[in-house]
Image (cartoon, rainbow, N blue to C red; front, side):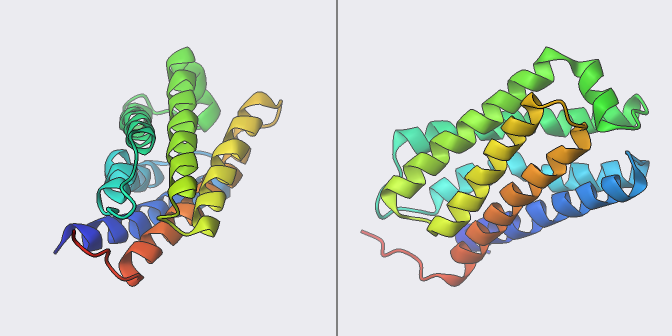
Length: 185
């Protein structure tokens, strides 16, 4: 399996599983062991996802801004994967309880996710190497996550931002899988 196919499939499957996990969490009114394990499986490729998307595009050459954004986004999801295991170990039953237990460290990683995603999106939009709609959905989800974190609404509403972000990632994966590979120079 070549890198393009691996990245494309990961960009479709991981965000889909994450959204499925979010729906289960919403339906149950909180975390469950099975839902958290599904979330963890979905998060495993996420630290590498934007880096993979960056790696498969060569024309035009993705810039340093996109690379830094992909790395920041990946670092945030490395931490988020860890928090899923913490929720399992500590028997946290809601997102609110998890966030309250992790405090500012969780928030800092949320900021890294948003900043990294914005940097990646701005660069990709400028270069034109990904579908505009996919990128706009992705960045809309990030900005909605940020807005909801600042508003006095229950944390379960973060699912809306995550869903938009995940739809954008799935659309990027689809484009990678079904567009013509770039010519090697």
